[in-house]
Length: 205
Image (cartoon, rainbow, N blue to C red):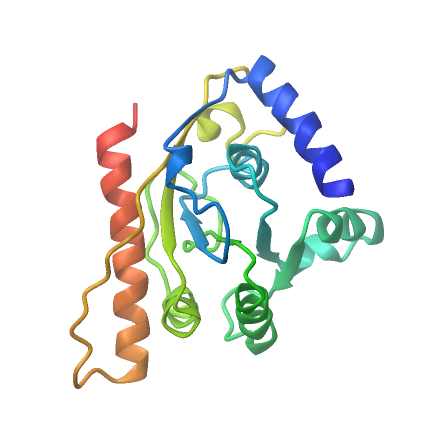
């Protein structure tokens, strides 16, 4: 109930205030688990992805967002769970695989934090681990305009058009012969961020 109430409020607000348009929504699977991977420019990105998809999404979010009881409750109501940044958080990885194993979609921001300058950051192998183990469709997305509306350096939302581009399922390199697990996970992570970078090159203004 809380998720869909929030979805409706954000949908209306974003459409009116930020003129949000979604391109490629048809690439989202109608049922079953998938991983939606996206660039991360702003605090606006999670709800922007949420209103871009007509399915209930689950999110990985940094653990310190859950430390305030009221805000932590809101985060859980919108299907977010904590992950410790910069560490191999086994609990978060297991939770991600559990969610996907139940046929639910999961949002991951491979960069792990918001960009300071619109540039994509290198990614670690955690997302590659999840991709390798879950074996579900991976859908890339690129959000254009959220940095201009609410960058890291300001707290006041600015009126700026936002576009959310959703791409087709990523096709990963199939030859894994002889690859060590860590190398394989990093390669998969690199392919994920490359797919997002290609969307940025195509659509960014």
